[in-house]
Image (tube, rainbow, N blue to C red):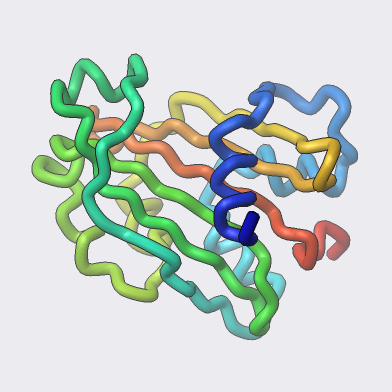
Length: 168
């Protein structure tokens, strides 16, 4: 299995949890960070780059938060690797239902290699949930954020890769 397939599988099959229980403090500081992860990343590296691994319209699995907004379950999937000082740090997926794009998030289609957080967080999205997962086999942590932008949902998944510097 290639790296990207493994990363996607880890995000899809995560054992999602809330709260700090069982999280080392240095890891909790990142996984439970409620502001822009992009800005926090920029504060610890000289240069943050975005490598797009895939993006486009996809059929998504039905989920309660999306079903009420998009009967076709069509969403824009943006999948990237965030690189801090040329090191692969985070594999991220952002899923925006079609109606979210059409009503409040059309600029996402034009982001290119800019981090989504720089566009999203100035708009003050409401965080509905923030969960984390740990994969014992790979020893990788992930987080999942459900956000509402002006009443329209989106989900961001972030997998912290082996090179990620949890230690400051």
